[in-house]
Length: 263
Image 1 (cartoon, rainbow, N blue to C red):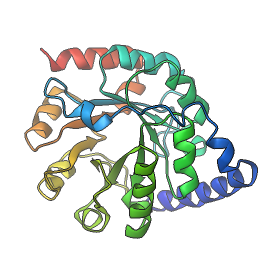
Image 2 (image 1 turned 30 degrees about the vertical axis):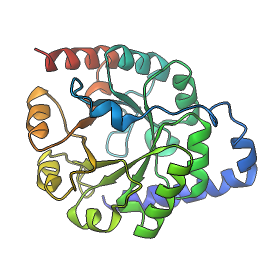
Image 3 (image 1 turned 135 degrees about the vertical axis):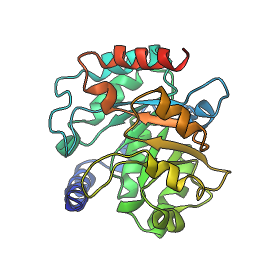
């Protein structure tokens, strides 16, 4: 199953190369969002009165080809915001996750909280594109990039006033990927070999993440007990997607989850 990541990256390179032939950077820089001040996800999730929930919108994934294929991005993300999520994550990969930039832009017009553009970034072009669609935060996945690429993309992101969420799966990835331009370190609890999730991966890596980085745990978080346990290991935020999206009403699932945290 690890080969799925290689397949995604291969397809992403083809897709980006095609985009670069038909869209020039200057046109992206003309976007209405290019000069707008961004929202800080890091500041939002480290607030003491916040549980730091980042609610995710996605229709499918390589391991689950039908999570919620007909879901409407605006309806659900507005519901996430109303439920007091600290931030919104939207998958913009179409082939493997059923997302697109239109989902992101249409939601951006309605939301006033930090938005993470979740995609497989392998080219500087995608950072300019992320800014042009109204992103506040971009995702860099350590398992897809080398240390030089992570540093280069992180620096460019900062020059665009974008925050950087660095996603890691292992101590080895942590060791080569951290740099001063990273704002948030996210530990992905999903095993790339078999796609199972286990929050113990976050717990295992928690002590290796320097304290000056904001820490979030991603995937496999299902209840208040998971949140409390992970908070005790220093995690400030929690990315939750499938747990909400697999229901008939993701916005309401998010609202009920948020209510449970304060009970």
